[in-house]
Amino acid sequence: MADLTEGKELISSGMTRETERCRAALEQSVCGNQVALISSGDPGVYAMAGLALEMAEAEGFNTEIDIIPGISAANAAAAKFGAPLMLDYACISLSDLLVPWDMIRQRLEAVAGADLVVALYNPRSKKRIAQLDEAVEIFRKHRPGTTPVGIGTAVSTAEEQITLTDLDHIFDHEMGMRSVVIVGNRSSRTSDNWFITPRGYTL
Image 1 (cartoon, helix red, strand yellow):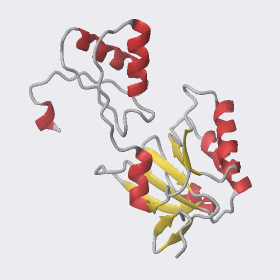
Image 2: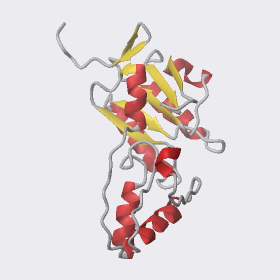
Image 3: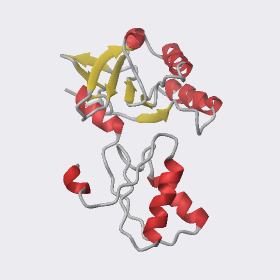
Image 4: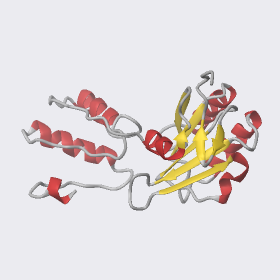
């Protein structure tokens, strides 16, 4: 990455500082500077694109914005597991920092009952443990314990960890904020260490 940033001003911030970072980027842009606002994964999936557009509208930043798509964590992990997202699926973040847990629980109940494959973002943090426990409990009401589960952590980085397990054994493995957890539907299966959700083709 050094070859891309050499000679350029870098402004960085940690977790929970997204608003300040976005405002700084917009302020630099309206001053005539060319700015790249970087986020992991796809900027339009739990990342910075939405905040930038909302802030530009709310605070009157009159500047041109281009959104360059990336690879979402769910799709990056899915490619490592095989083909778990071959049929309808949903993405749900278990972080309740911006969305009330009651609303997240309703969404989990809905997609579990609809037999959708689900990609769970932000499954756990050091302080936030109970949410994943409750999510798994909800899925266990609708799916057998043998339902395949893929855990992808820091996918496509040097720290990448790829784990294929099932609902019965999901808590045997570590997960954190850099993990995405894919829970199969009732037809999902594993074969030769591949996680497959059949599309329905006649073979």
